Amino acid sequence: MIIEKEGRELSPLEFEKYTGAKWILELDFETFDVFSSIAKKGVELYKKGEMTREQLWLGRYFQKEILSHPQPDIAIRWIDPMIGWGVFAERDFKKMEFIAEYAGKVRKRKKTDVKNGYCFEYVLVSGIYSPYTIDALEQGGIARYINHSARPNLASSLATFENISHIILYVKEPVAKGTQLCYDYGPDYWSKRTAPFPL
Image (cartoon, rainbow, N blue to C red; front, side, top):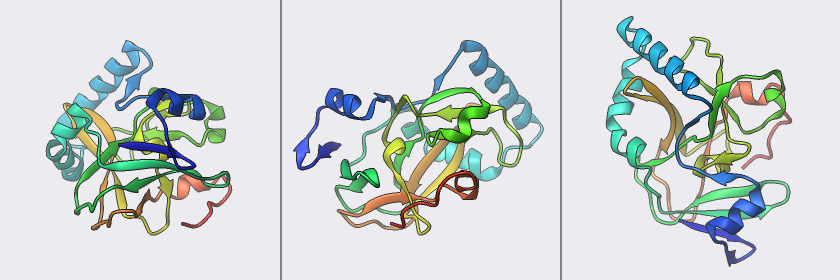
């Protein structure tokens, strides 16, 4: 993985200073109570058959990546003040290759979260309300820097492993070296925010 700003390669510590965000690659549950509550609910939903085949299959398929957090062959580069950072392929990627998990602080939602562009709804099962969010404002990994596109080359999906759900990003279609990696943030994200600069 390469981190660059204006043609200069940055160390992870320099990058943290630029972004104000601690570099992490996995979910950071705010408290043990939050983790145990989510794990308990996950067991209940699994027993009731509420978890989809897709999320369970993706959890098994990407089990190794969820556990080991591999660093893909990507570059995080500063684009400009309007767009900010972006993530680019450093080699050709095939369909279904794992890129990243959306990492951050898992905590209960707050009313002020609508002003935080780094919150991703944390759900155990799609369509079932969850009081939790993944907040990557002050800490996050690769996914924090992947931009939105209405024509994405990455898919964002729910992958459940050992009754804990993960939001993962993987390659939706073959991607050529040098291409910016993007995913669709979804209509809920833009309902209370300014429409994005088209990529």
